[in-house]
Amino acid sequence: LALKRMSVRKDYRGLGIAMALGRTALDFARQRGSRAVVLNTLMLQQEARALYERLGFRRHRRYVLPTVYGRLANCTITTYRYELPGAP
Image 1 (cartoon, rainbow, N blue to C red):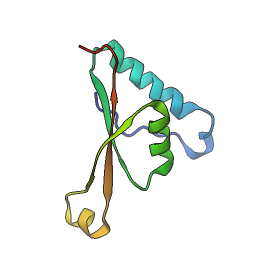
Image 2 (spheres, rainbow, N blue to C red):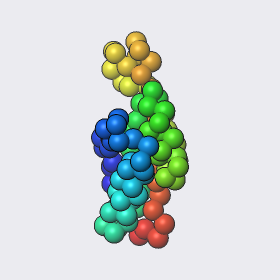
Image 3 (cartoon, one colour):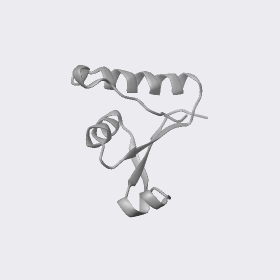
Image 4 (cartoon, rainbow, N blue to C red):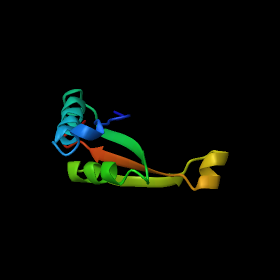
């Protein structure tokens, strides 16, 4: 399962909403029999990366966005992966 574009409006951050959304996404994936949840994030998104690591995601790989802009700006993407225990 791929997790994409999870965000919480700035004035609602710090209330545990993102953590609850992340846990809900993991529960959804587990109930559907997924083996893992994966996501990509920019290196600039420090708060998001910290949240994913608190949820139990592990860094899977890093790469520079394979476009002219990505190479010029050194736009680094980190892929995170959460292995779901007991998955088939």
